[in-house]
Length: 417
Length: 166
Image (cartoon, rainbow over all chains, first blue to last red; front, side, top):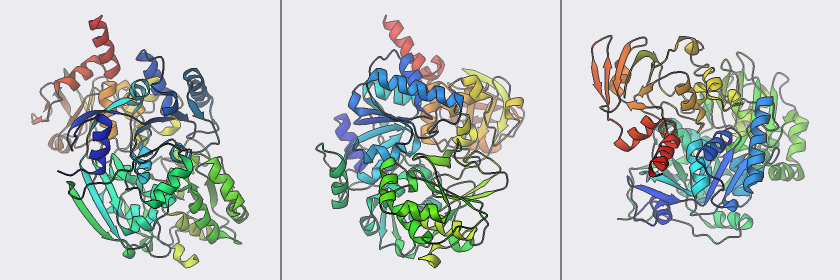
């Protein structure tokens, strides 16, 4: 019987003929931790009696969630991470480097066919470049750092065949929100998802990351894409090691195959307080907003700032809106500056914060007030997510957020393109 | 292991941001984390909860972030076990690793009410609602997982095994 991408990658890394449902112990290519979760992992690592990481080149830590530190307690945790990284001889990306899920692929740490775990649920992002990557808790990450291995239950796979091009003004964010709205927040729990078809082929790698990043919002363990010429070119620029992309067999066994004509999708919004609470933008136009945010591991990439700057060039945002932008990495910040995107956005009224997670997770950089509405390019709109449980968060594409910042209410970006 | 306690009931899709908001991840002290447990869903939870109480919830409990602080703070708040219709994947794994027992039973999750007194036999997967007299059967943990839970989590389990090997 043929195999899915997940079955193939987990078979290869466990020297097994593994199929969905099997339990395997697999060798990891890379392990990542961020500042929200690494401190617990470090404590577990030490409690385990481990002294060295399994491979200094294959473990990194990133300070991105609360960077720079807004609080004494966080400073102590950052200190713990820096000391651990120094002591173990591993790379630590400190404040201002960017969000872990941008840095791991951008800095060439992973390549197609790899098996990766990270102490962050959005680790599934690297599926966009054909990496089986998944989020894990601190105890699992501690075991992974110490041994280079972890046990996995081989997941069943749901396959999406995404047909036709997205319409003008409709982006990969709209597509993934649409799919999550249909399958719901736990529709793919314990499953892997494969995204294939012409729609994916037409997207840039930046745009593909947005889709795989949000696979966890349907409960999925991994959100996988095949490596095409665009993928290979993107990875080879950043990673000099040899790699073997993995494609599914034509007779692979899927739990479900879902086809979608993506040309019909309009801009989408996830309403408070769950990501699967999705509506077409036409149903929400005019909802007042008080804060707009472009950034995060979902939509803080170069293409996102390009789109936003095109909408806002030469204009001023609404005077009742605070507009925060956070590039997903230092490299993106520099490139977006060189390209003139940052100038346009800042002149329009954007407040630029440190490359990193920005206000996404409510630790700093723009906590909304009671009763306020935020429109954000992030991946989660949970109650309290941005630090105030009395605020409401709407999720949309960078174009939608830029257009909404301009008018002060939820606005269809197609009117501004 | 048998637990007896009062039920604190919640709805579907209770996420890890609700269980422990990221703004409180400025410590790894379990007791301090527990002082903010469920704060954004139920501000009084910490005041109401007593040792061995049971949390009951609907679908997809623990969805969202991978933060292990979520099961850690529930356990440190005194909760003996969580019963839900379904659990999110990363939370499920994290809870076992830190020794917080979970029981999956849609029937129990739907029919048990807030404030009911329940008794849970973990080895058998039996949930008894002492208030109504109804009994529910969930699939018990495998003996391997039960040993991890009994040891208080994966770390203690591994330590005990290593010590036994001497």
